[in-house]
Length: 312
Image 1 (cartoon, rainbow, N blue to C red):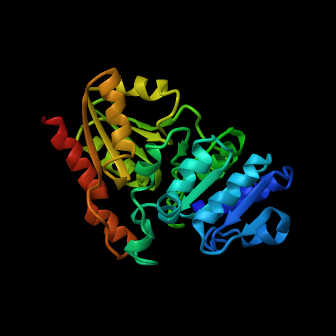
Image 2: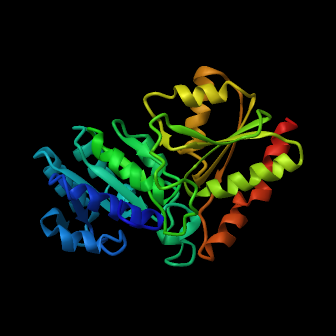
């Protein structure tokens, strides 16, 4: 396994490792080679790298053409530039014919902070793609999970979107831990007062919140939901059946992402109280940790929300 740190480096490491044995793997870049940390990949496999310039729509169209010829193209760039600017192409040229194109959206959520500012933080990508049929959506928690998510995506026949970050992700998993096909992994199991379901790069805050709650004799279970709107949600439903209180936490708009997915499962299977923690406004430019705390993702605020929700 190639060494890496963070979700961007993990993506580049995964496609590099796969390309060594699979000539179908390709990377399509809309002027995102450096942003995706894939410079070494392009140098080692120049025949597997296509640069289209700042033209996300063209990148998706090129990838669709390659997929129609049997290749496995990965398109990687900023999450919003991809899912907003090239939304029509992702929908009509890839999802509708169910072509085998993989997408990696970086700088998702608030962790981008002050590096490039609010215009380069994205919290709508999951909501956009959740409304498009045929997409498999992965939300890995850290670099290690991103590496395995990329390799798992290459094994799936059809469109896959992988949500990646800014490089500031806190390691949650060991590098050897596989990407869980069940769609959820229990990371803490203190009890069933509340089930906290989270996804992506906010999990370290959620785990700290669970420890704070335990000190107050409030026993929660924390689950990492790494696949949204999956075809088999049995494991998630089994967890949800253990409690009458659920709190979801996501570094994404409060609509269309994890909270909406879990609320739908609850309504359709076993109605229970679901409290959603997420963004209900645009973010701001500023230090990443300060932004995360300001917008309600601090361990203290998550714990407070769980306590308040238990009183309802």
